[in-house]
Length: 69
Image (cartoon, rainbow, N blue to C red; front, side):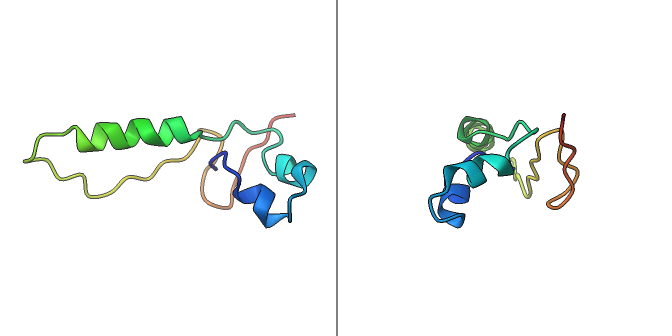
């Protein structure tokens, strides 16, 4: 789960509905993803980073979340 404006667009500009998507969760931020990209491109040229799967610690899969509260 990544904090982004997709949810606002998805719900036709309804910010309350968009915020409810993230209720009880601490989503990843664009800065978290940027940090991973900087790490990846900073590897020596003999290193191949073939795959990266990133979830916040409360998200077990794309469909399973543990919400606080």
